[in-house]
Amino acid sequence: MHPDDRRESLIGVFLDLAHREGRPPTTSEIAREAGVAEGTIFRVFATKDALQDEAVQTAFCPAPVRRSIAAIGTDLPVRDRLVAFTTIMQRRFTEVFGLMGALGLTEPPNRGPHLACYAAGRHLRGATDAPEAGAEDCEPHQPLLDTIHQLVLGESDAFVVPARDVVHRIRLLCFSGSHPGIADGRTLTPEEIVDTVLYGVVARPPTCSTHHADHTQRKASAC
Image (cartoon, rainbow, N blue to C red; front, side, top):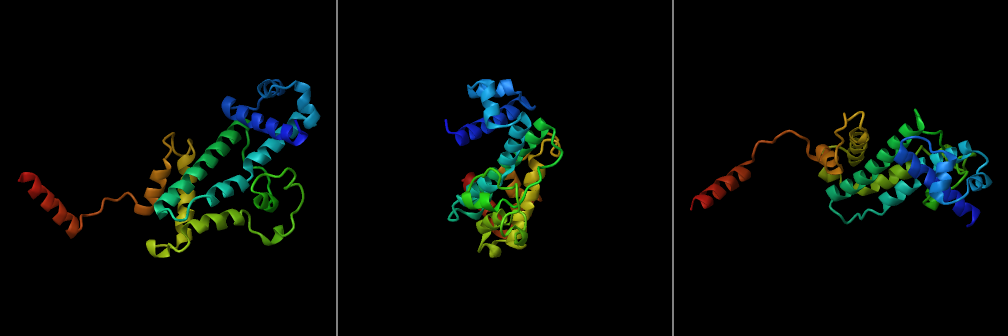
């Protein structure tokens, strides 16, 4: 196996085991799961800490998330677009929360804007090791935010707040509603998150047309 492929395979195994076991896996567990000798790990990574550091950087890279969001069809109804977006973000948050808990992380790793990763559509090893060209002019995660905002481009007339505010509120509720600790174990579904932002939870009085339709239906049922 090519060294780069071996590296990616071991990173994937590390992350899978961390999620499954809820703790940092041992090198013997990683080797057994990967089907390699334990010494193979240290021919790719100098130390176990180096493997863990790279696994964390890979897991937190936003480029794959942006690629998934960009694939959402803009021809879908706006609610369906937002549910698809929220599904992707909830999966992302769940994976990140789980990994941080398993590894005892109290905050995300220090990351740059990942401009090279965004361009490639995937995590690039070493992309955050040095300042990136153009990084000083780029807001953190701006490429990701630009892609998200494309989902509601041209939908301003559908909302009573700016379309970007709708996305912002969905992101906030998705974060809190997907965290088991914040949500007291009652996490929200993507549909619940989107519908709460779009339609709220207050019962609305029936309109005249709704009242007329109900009256007509009752008369028809009585016949």
